[in-house]
Image 1 (cartoon, rainbow, N blue to C red):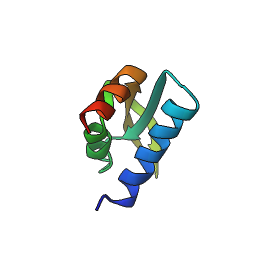
Image 2 (image 1 turned 45 degrees about the horizontal axis):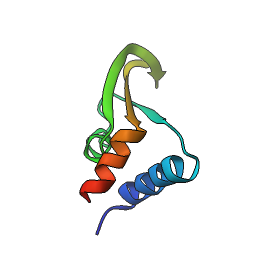
Image 3 (image 1 turned 180 degrees about the vertical axis):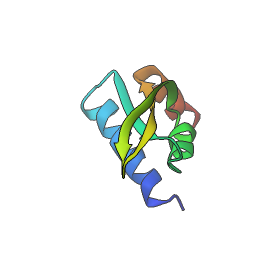
Image 4 (image 1 turned 135 degrees about the horizontal axis):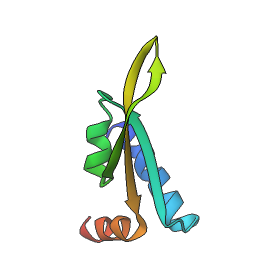
Length: 80
């Protein structure tokens, strides 16, 4: 059974692409975020890194940008 995070992301992707008819989704995450692997597994692609972009607890972190296009989502749905 899929984890709750994966289920939530899949539901959000389905709603955004199928109900709202969006063309693109994007997200960002800090370096070291364990969810990064989930995002890649779901089909999100890396777009770049904002180096030392955000401060958390007094430390600067890189922020990684990822996105998915409608056609990428539709291609993934066909292979399921």
